[in-house]
Amino acid sequence: MDGTLIDSEPYWHQAEVDLAHEHGGDWNADMGWQVSGKPLPTVARLMRERGLDLPEDQIPDLLIDGVIAMEERHMPWIEGVRTILTDLVGAGIPSILVTTSPRRMAQAVVAKAPKGAFADYVCGDDGLAQKPDPAPYLHAASLVGINSPDLMASCLAFEDTLTGITSAVASGATTVAYTGTNPVDTSSGPQFASINSYVGVTLDDLSALIANRLGQSGSPVAQTC
Image (cartoon, rainbow, N blue to C red; front, top):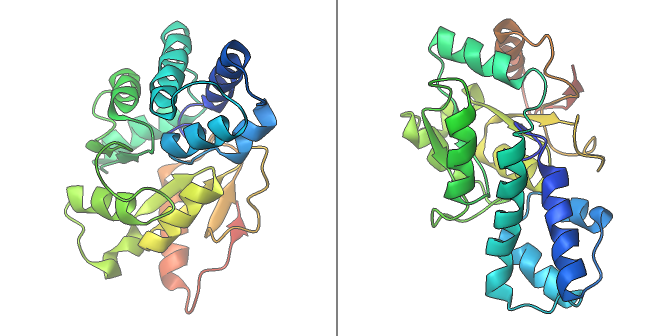
């Protein structure tokens, strides 16, 4: 979700920096990028280790409140995302939102997405093992009736962090690294392909990625498109 559908990673980093300024601690945006995609309790623990003077269990909710406040002023959709989601709805292809963010944040994004864009969503507070474990993607696939490992290659997953990429790849999904928002280099990740923009991407382009993956023998090799 963050950094893949909406360019909200800067919001998270700003919320982290603001919290550190208010309650002590050594934290900056570069540190924020290093923990992008990681569960909020992990971020809270690391911020505490850097001197943030707050109970660890309070930090995630305070960060969420800060990000939600910014999103209420402006939901930062990544250019081209809404067009692709609308096209998928028109073609009858279901999408599942898979995020480590809590459900209340996912619900806010789904509510502002094109009507019917998401058949369901999997969130960080759903009680599943979290990314980089494949559990969130395997559960997402099951929500649309895909329960066989052999069928996972026909699912297309978009991720922007190595944590998310690792999760999606481990599930067997055809994984695409979106590089348009994350300054951390993911080119050496295990993804099947990488893209830096959604603008002009068609359903035929997405279908071709899956066809290429299914047509390959052996392990997938990363490509850029």
